[in-house]
Image (cartoon, rainbow, N blue to C red):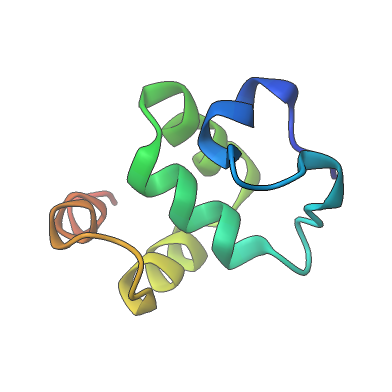
Length: 75
């Protein structure tokens, strides 16, 4: 699966065409969770299992405590 061009503002430092969602899943999830808004939140929920998302975000050193606490509240 390719990332939409709409995500370019969140991946300013990366070529979107080179992002492989299978290989770079954690990077994509953490970046969108940390920098994204409601559209990105809904996209994450639609494209990934919620337990998987929460686990990726919980383990990440690149996600703020604020974002981690937000995702803890999601059921």
